Length: 321
Ligand code: 13P
Ligand code: SF4
Image (cartoon, rainbow, N blue to C red; front, side, top):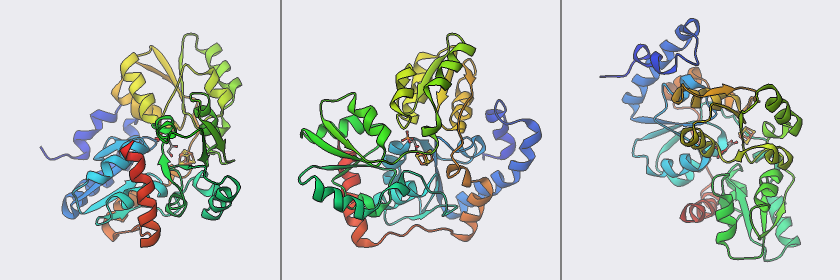
């Protein structure tokens, strides 16, 4: 059966009110058709809204899964429903494909917090100390790094290097959260995710008081004091897996708002308490601009070949861990 908006509504009816559906259905049908015509696939991050995540995406996941799966795409065109660094990573790993990002302004406060020059200066200050760079960075920053990591593999990456000390950039809170799990000394930078830095330990305590017995899952981009109040901390994929495995009666995902909608679709028996923060960058991606990306071939991601060769090495080293 060919997919259509009408056949997809059942899937998302728990999180998209019927009255809103007509706003989406025309774009969904157009995107499904354009994907066939252009031999395109859509990769969507867990923070995309449910009409994107559940209705037009072919591949969904956390940053690590999207990177791994981008490498295996055989279609001609990849549309990255996520932020710019994710589209760059897909282009690095599958350079012969056209990689489109529907809005070039879909950035990231972490990626904006560090430049290649910052890394060169850090290398002078800490000679011989390997540089582990979070994937939430530009290709130019990755090119100055020894290896990348995501929130899903940061501890394994740091420990894979077999050294007593690493620089882990640019997320200060991720670095501090990982430092608590390893004997490797971690030197951090001062970047923060503008979504996760806003959560406080008081927020968690208030949620627990208002919803006794609630399970609290937090993303490791949250400050360590927030992670300390949670029952579990992990990447967006790890949080989603936790809900599937443990099936808590009620849960709060201390992260971007769309995560709860997307996971709730799969788990009708779990109650989701929904204090969350919106990522303005992720929210720049809409069905409307995914449709025009496919219609107009916009905006194709390009990376300087010299930068790309070095950045690819850092990402590939990560994938080999
Ligand atoms: P993960 O999906 O890798 O956990 O990353 C979260 C994030 O903030 C991506 O921008
Ligand atoms: Fe960047 Fe935070 Fe938005 Fe992820 S949620 S894209 S880390 S600003």
